[in-house]
Length: 426
Image 1 (cartoon, one colour):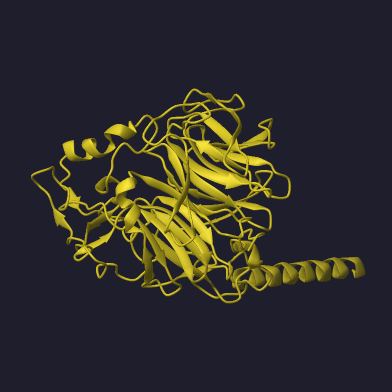
Image 2 (cartoon, helix red, strand yellow):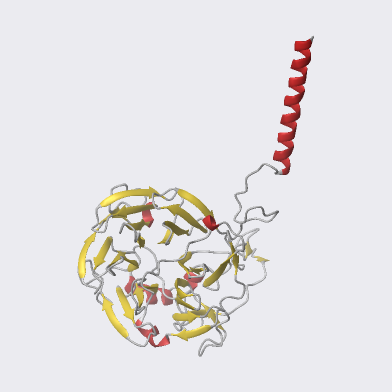
């Protein structure tokens, strides 16, 4: 009887314990928070650990010649500081309100426009066409016109290089260089350059321009303007660049090129590596398709290269020796990435519309982002930068508005925030 009583008591205790644990699980008392802000009740991490800065940037229709116009496709963004943010765009688009949804029976039954998401694809509307791999740069503008584009009506080639302050006001427009540009693709400042020269890649003109920080003087052009090639003095639609701590640098070359090209700090050619791969299923090291993104780890000088066509990131030493790689998913479409001072790689994916965090061994750690043309929604992130306060800027080729600013939430888990940039020389 005593043993039966003990067994009954133990059973009741076990039942009570399980019931208590179940209650805790149901009510979240013992659950672990994986949210960007630990302990938050309700809501969701739609924008990760950030709040979108509403109304940033300001309306640009007050700029000379931009009346009734707005942002074109947002190609790139770079924050020199929280109060000086460079932005590249492919000209201007007409400033019009989104149309109200309506059925289009003349097209097909049950077809409506616009559908949810974005109603005007900025990269298709903006000058020029011939965007992706295989696109012939020399036909970029004529193809846009032949496709029905009307200069001055459907798009304008003005205000391609803008500079914003922290409030989103345009404080500079480098319009003096508009006529020289055909498709400004990337803007950055060498983090080890105390003079803060501004570098701009024009992939359709096959060159990289180096300007004084105020934009008044073109200091240097690398590549042969308007001529494609694959030698020491030519590119074939270069896309991005990144610096080593000694100010030597590498260039991803590019949309049609199949190389990484390395230069010394003065812009003299040193070496190159890479071969054309089989698009979509290439596995050989240093073979690739659409070399669209590059970054350098300053701690090791390893070079991270985006083999966009084959959905993988390949890693090399600073002389081009292959080290390792990782895949970004069967439907991944990485546009570009940056390496932050805490040793992580943050990438922008055009298919999932998310910002992805990896460690430098390729382990996936976190993602955030949601598709849409509302404030905070993203589409086609093509440029990403972080200022010294931790604010994040995203340039988008597809979305209206071109560029957005995201501000860290108070109390956010630092693991979910994009670290500050490497600013060794400033």
